[in-house]
Image (cartoon, rainbow, N blue to C red; front, side):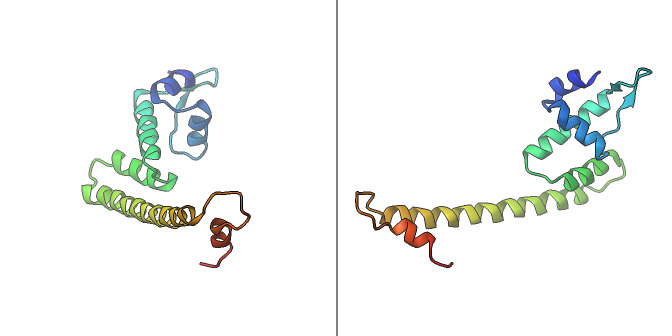
Length: 129
């Protein structure tokens, strides 16, 4: 498959696929004319990377997960550790977003939103944490 075909099938832009090749996440072979020639295995890796990145895994996590996927003697505990650490990071981000929402919600609630110049939102944003 060429890069256009594998881009369509994996859902990744060609530019991203070239980047993944540059950082050695994938290593497609080359035809005699120098064009990339992607195998079914390359397509699987790209689909894997697309899904992992959509779930928020870092490039380094993706590299480690791909290495584990390729290692038939892997322990599933190693995979679970990476996924579990990422899940904890997501939970931290959710907690941070909920705190941000609470703070902003409080400020919006306190603001009359009328024609007067005093605004609790601006006052609140100007206060140190």
